[in-house]
Length: 229
Image 1 (cartoon, one colour):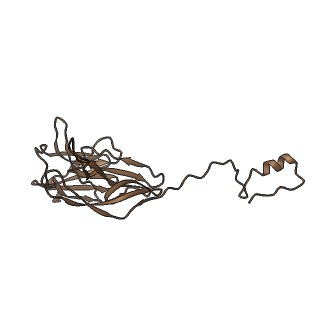
Image 2: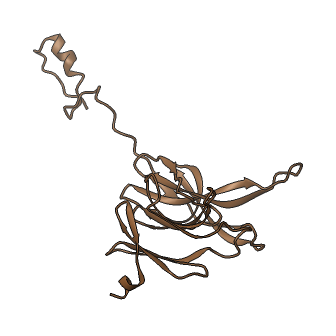
Image 3: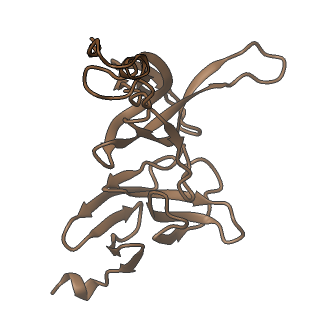
């Protein structure tokens, strides 16, 4: 409803008056930002056969829906980074057909996604040495801890702690050589975070547990005698 102008005002002022809303705001003001809706759909289950495992395992799938449209398939629980953003793991649908075969679609866990609830924007994360088949990130705040594979000249199996949007890993501890064949079991287990002091621990398969104190973008290995204090 627009404000009415007094009949006595000149025609020019009446014309200007019509450009204002009843709230006193100009009609030419910038429109309000679009409100986006971000949600995760119901869970459905499929199977996934890790390379070298021989047996299929259950893989829960959930659609990531932005403004009523499905954008990605995801798996696992989301982790809130801030009150407006979260990370969740993507699932890829790959064609496993050999040359000359008909399409043979299969599901496989993929990289992590960063989702902004306010803008609806989705960003694929490139975590250092993260391997979709081997790695399973455990998050705390904006830190991710996982075992990964490096294919550089000094490559091998590494324990990695990475910070979101960080240029390099905070922790990159070599655990062993690059596996000659697909791993038959997870390369590490028992990744656990501690708040005060900020510390992450991991138990590599067949090796002694390791702990690292994390300070901002740096970390230090916790020695055995320090734990005993």
